[in-house]
Amino acid sequence: MSTKILISIALFFSTNLLWGQDGPKFWLPNGSFEGAPRDALNPEGWESSSYNSTPDILPGPWGVYQRPTDGNTFMGLICREDGTFESVAAKLPKALKKDKCYKFELDLSRSQAYAGYTGAACFRLWGAQNAEEPMQLLAVSEPITHYEWKTYQFNFITKAKYSYIIIECYYKTPSLLPYRGNLLLDRFLYFDYCERA
Image 1: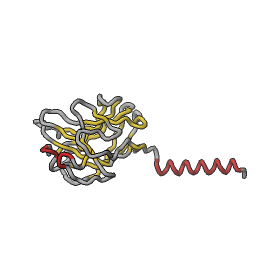
Image 2 (image 1 turned 60 degrees about the vertical axis):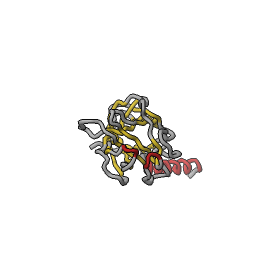
Image 3 (image 1 turned 30 degrees about the vertical axis):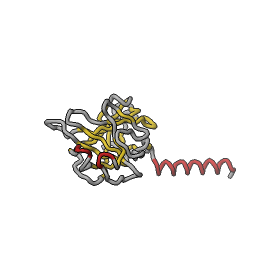
Image 4 (image 1 turned 90 degrees about the vertical axis):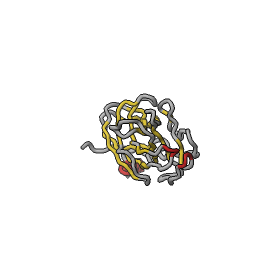
């Protein structure tokens, strides 16, 4: 057997082996929210997606001292009693395709401190074409009432192609009045394809 044929066979099997291990999974930019702990600072790879929206890199600021579940830091967001809430966006390394089923997981928690923003808030994820305009609500959590980290898993089907995702800290709905709440996030590392139900 010629050397060229042997190389072709080896490449074919190594490519399929790697695809089987990793699949179509793609990694998010700084999904561990790493950076120097500081208030009102976007983790690298993320940007504020609305006015008055600056996340915090934790632990340390605002009396939040939980340990991260991945790396050295995590991100904190708040919602306020005046009806405003914090959100951040990231440009994806490759766009989410239309009419595809995706899955992801991340770790969520809540702080007992956070400068008095102690209510239980919800995680919301949007698909978008830019950092300021959410288009499709892809995932929503229940209000995060626990103070320890828990892993949440979500599936969604896209209605369009999205180059950005937007994360929001949002109020429990229905809710009579907006309130002070917080949301802690870590280990939001990748999207992967999933089977439709």
